[in-house]
Image (tube, rainbow, N blue to C red; front, side):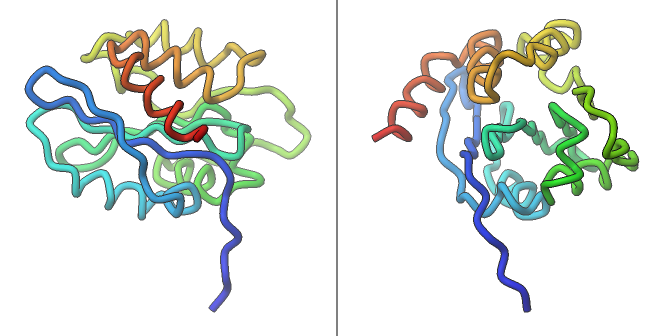
Amino acid sequence: MTVQEPVAGFAVAVVREDGRWRCSAMDSSVLASLDTAITELRGLRSTGAVFGMFNVDDEFFVLVRPVPGGVDLLLSDAAAALDYDIAADVLDLLRTDPPDEEDDEVWPEGNLALLADIGLPEGEMLVIVEEVDLYPDEQLEMIAQRCGFGEQFSGFMERLDQ
């Protein structure tokens, strides 16, 4: 049995219940295992939106949203699959090949419209993802603000910094 090194970053579960948003920390093991992330998110039963936002090693982010019959995914940088298991798992689930090692272009893979029903259309998500001058936590903060839970996300980030 091999021991996996912990992956730096953070994972937040976002839940909307009765019109109110809540952001809570997820176990850091989800940053290394997409299956673990999906299982943990499916355990957060809610009548409203449930999804996960993962900042992996300050290199890229992953959005995971369980849906009936599957899961919607967005990987901010497909090239991350060359170095990170969770990114490779996302591409495997999407049935997409990783890019060549020589390709240094950043492009997303997955469903850019996975948060369209809560206020973030596909085109705006693409603009956020393509903003390569921002760190993943800054991109996730922009997503949170656009979807209407910016204050809750900021509170989560403040608790992380303590």
